[in-house]
Length: 210
Image (cartoon, rainbow, N blue to C red):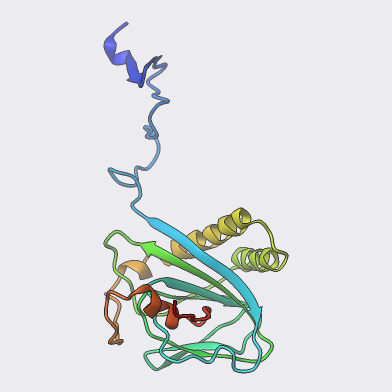
């Protein structure tokens, strides 16, 4: 047998049949995403739901070193970025990238869902904020499933997987927007926000200096 027909993986010698190397994640028919694999890191910090009461979400100039995605089961709330108002609602997801200042507009009785996450785009540039995605039935159902799972106190692993699945689907459909012109930033905060600083600017956080 020719040595080219054999490959050594750790301490095991594997005979390759018909040219297949089952120790490698690369095949002759697949699409190689990059020399080192897809350079895309996504970390979910939190997901949550609440029903707004009064003006409990009327915050101004919120800015944080992480990303946000919002989905509301009813219309009525909005975010304002660079003076432009973007409505939240059941048929769209609104994504606000890191370090983008925005205002929140609340409405009594509106069910509100959020996912807070960090995203490493490996050099990709971001389009103008916010990013708005019109949802098909499948994604609307996914958001409804996550909302129901949070409300019924499902295991954290399930919530994490549901959140990651939603984010991957949304970001896949926004690929072109995530690679266009650089994000226009209008805030004057330091680019190196400390933890207490971004906590103070997070509308979902009760600020307690320690």
